[in-house]
Image 1 (cartoon, rainbow, N blue to C red):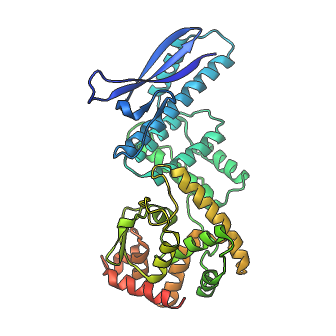
Image 2 (cartoon, rainbow, N blue to C red):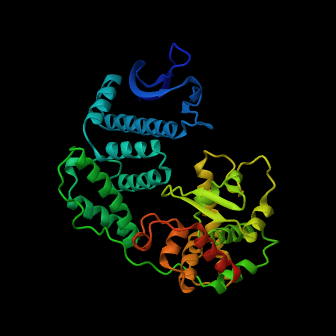
Length: 398
């Protein structure tokens, strides 16, 4: 059996980057496979064979290198497994040759992984995660057998759609995966890596109307007034839900990355991680009460107690999962029939604002929508005071 090790060769000059390479070992024969991944010596952990990211302005770049290394190692191990399954004698050189040949051929797995890497380098972490999730799903459908871009056709996509439906996914969920794959495929076509065979013409790529996720103001009041002082996990989930509602339906990821310095002179300013749009919210007493309730870690730069380590995104995901799960219990306590999640706070703010005859353009601006056609039609930009008055009008009735 062959082994793969990830190695780092530092530069002879202290101020220059070194190079990552792979060591292929088979029957005591060692071969090296070079990469173009460059790191500084302090960005590499030799014992763990891992990239050290830390608090660095190169974090996006380092994350992308880390992702590429994991992908390369996975491909190398798949090659070794494939060669071994043929029950023939193979060498370390055979592994290197097979790896280089697969890199030269344009396959979906490789091309999509490159797209994911570029998204990470551009700081589009959330988008890269949705692409990675789609790639993982398609790889499971293919049983990890890659497919050339030129072999992707409508029959393959119909089979994938049937596979997703067989796993119980809704039309909107299957459409989500299909739209991402279509975007990747179209990008490959633009780069002249394959000709367009319209492989998505027979699968569903639309968006169906979903079950209503907004709840009335009466239910919001009930959630707010629950006495959860003896149930800390429920109390925390309720507070995060209310904070999202107070702040015009702020998404959980934006809440997680809010910093204390973002609050100044009675104005909370933040940039949406999804769209990059900057929003300004007048600070209200109800928001301050939640922050004061959890302001025990004076060393933390964050406004809310969601993150402890800035580059540990799994921490955010785990907290989101636990909070949404706990909100289901709160829904039962107030007699709600719909699944209560943090996203319900966002839908509810918009729905309640609309019921108060607040213009759609104001609602769109307040929620940070950057692609709302209605907002573009009514006016190009909106005074923050108008949005703040709308939010104050809603909060006054709680």
